[in-house]
Length: 516
Ligand SMILES: Nc1ncnc2c1ncn2[C@@H]1O[C@H](COP(=O)(O)OP(=O)(O)OP(=O)(O)O)[C@@H](O)[C@H]1O
Ligand SMILES: [Mg+2]
Picture 1 (spheres, rainbow, N blue to C red):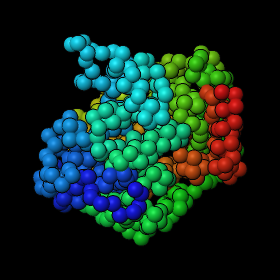
Picture 2 (picture 1 turned 60 degrees about the vertical axis):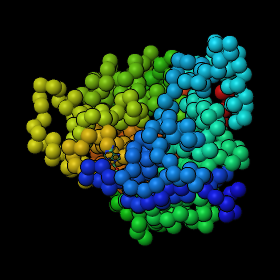
Picture 3 (picture 1 turned 45 degrees about the horizontal axis):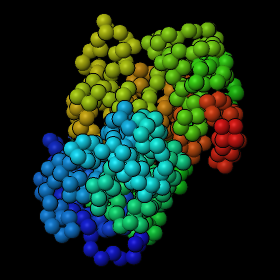
């Protein structure tokens, strides 16, 4: 149906408002979803996207407003209730059971029965057929955990086909997928669109927005800024509408904001002294022997696909995993890290990509989350005075533009992107000599991302070393002094700033496929 004017919306939101203590998360938001369209919701961190989706799926009850499904008012009371109305949601972190088979996961709670017993054969056949419908031919009797995250998301989506959903909602489903996986997801979504499904999609990636959307709704500060046909809205206009100021040109174009340029690059990287040197660092099944030199005051980019060995290398450097071979020296002295504690004591910080497992403690306040790593480094015997904690928290909330009611707010009530900023601050507070950043800006909006990398570059200028891991090639190319490309769990090449363009890096990354 694409951009032609569709007949009747399948779902209408009218004047939805929702307040939490101290925050008007949504203020009179209206939205129409039509069958056979991909409608993307965009806006800065904390704009209200996830809250709108939670209202729609029965997680929150709106204070005001109406939801109409095929013209009839509904009041979903839970996600299950919403699902029974034909509204299905797939979150970024797939909430399925990894140990059960794919087929069991698809049918959880609604196993097909025959003569009073579970019909396993029928279930396998139906599950296969459902996935076939999305052009995915996998063995549905294997455990879900056997498959990569992208496939797991497809399984979650196929559940929604089973309940014959009319509306499919995806809140940042692509932030942990690599490029191929995103392509796969998008081809599935296009197929579902053809079949008349209405798809509501949330992302911070501009490229993805334009690759898949028919229509875009921009949200700002809990309000609907406007609704546009994707084909009619340029990137610059889109970013302008998100941030609400005419300063967004350079963000949309992908160049550095003034602050990052000012942070600048000092001496030639080759003149920097080595801070950390790894020689032949390896671990069976995770990383082939790798040499790496990280210099003082250098921002070293580690590029490569998900699973190329980037995170594995970082974990070995941080002592989170034990190396089978190789040595690590810090400032010329050989060190043997047996745990992250040793690495932290040596001045290394590691901001991990795994927000769910290694990151935020949702019940603790922003302040408490923020001082965790610093406290760990000092040891529990040396408590940081409350006053100092408050000072630090206020300082970093301001520096990183963290949107929170106060520093005592539980981190769980912050938007996803703002939680991520707190986790980054947690490591910045420790003032490490080397900070390893593994996908630090995942889920962070397009403008905040540039501000944060500008801030990090400025810290490098003052002497901090950064190992920057990211799947977003333009960002790596923009900020790094030097880039190491990983592929197939080994080092694929090393390039100084300015010698690389995106095509070359992709080439180096892709060359690995030949040997794979
Ligand atoms: N359970 C909650 N309790 C208190 N405040 C909340 C709660 N959930 C969301 N908020 C607040 O509502 C506002 C909107 O948050 P929401 O999660 O909808 O943003 P978002 O647009 O999804 O942002 P992001 O891009 O960072 O995911 C934020 O200020 C957030 O702190
Ligand atoms: Mg969100």
